[in-house]
Image 1 (cartoon, rainbow, N blue to C red):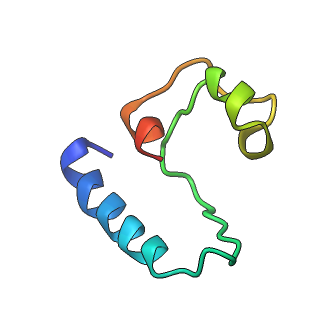
Image 2 (cartoon, rainbow, N blue to C red):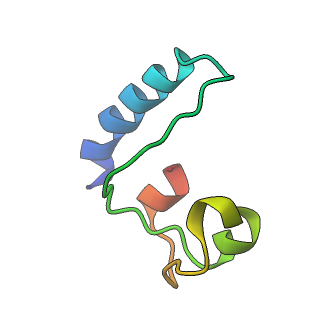
Length: 63
């Protein structure tokens, strides 16, 4: 996704998440073509696990 096409997607995603009760568990499942990088493994261990990719891209930053 380019920044132009991903902006509305992430805006809609944030709007939806803002409506969810904080006590609810939200699972976002899908391939957003986001790369979050190995550096996230240390801070988001329960999310990424030890198999993160080596690089981070713009969609990964936003996610």
